[in-house]
Image (tube, rainbow, N blue to C red):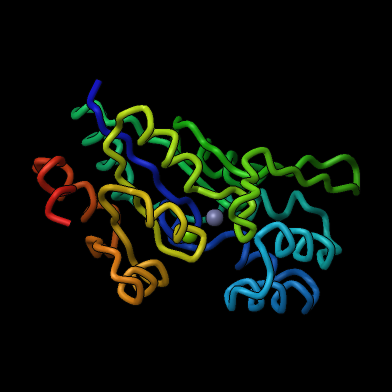
Length: 220
Ligand SMILES: [Mg+2]
Ligand SMILES: [Zn+2]
């Protein structure tokens, strides 16, 4: 085993489409779009955003699972998995979204990786949300990705983080090597956090494949 761990975001990163925000914005009452907008502006936490999205939704929630299964994967993900396997880098998927739609997406695309996400249990027409990785110290995330990064760092791992959005901010501040695009890249620019910009996961795989990771981390 290598002494590196790679954590990767799901919505907007492995799945180029932000599945939950797209689904609820498109198919739920206007309240859902408002919640997403307030979350983007930092006015509400992810837990509140998820609750309001689900509250605004009147349809059969199985449609969320089916929508997820219909979405494409970033094909570069498979190369990234291969590169990490060859180098012995452990990979974990971290999401501030819901296992309810991520698991069927991953199964559909033949991905077998550890996932840490928020939970949605569906009991008839009742939705039960739970947040197994909630971190009191953050208050903004439902599943604060910094906790996972910190645990790996404390175990002596060099931590690589790959993400695209606001839910990746806490993790990016603690990782040794950050790959970022979109909102996360903007956040890193604004806050002086060193990062490697990527468009697709093939770019990330290409860098990791030949890199001296310790030097890559130290250069930052
Ligand atoms: Mg994302
Ligand atoms: Zn957080």
